[in-house]
Length: 88
Image 1 (spheres, rainbow, N blue to C red):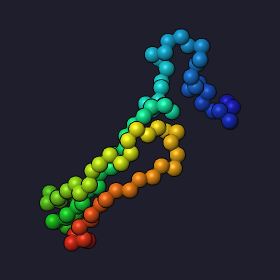
Image 2 (cartoon, rainbow, N blue to C red):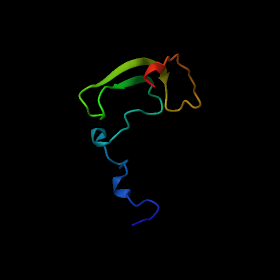
Image 3 (cartoon, rainbow, N blue to C red):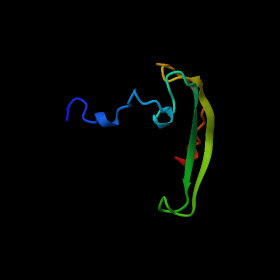
């Protein structure tokens, strides 16, 4: 066993002519995708978090990045988010 590559038997066999047997990543370097963020606020009416009186409300949901690729670096965004302070 090679200590630099201990799992060589799991590597892709490039001589294999059956592409349906090759595992491919879900997102490659050229695939574009979006990132959506959702912020929930939790109002606990009981004493335990698994209590049936737990109420969760969405206070923000939006697509914060659209059409980005894995090769995109140092991208930034900002969102307008109002957090109700009465529950804090």
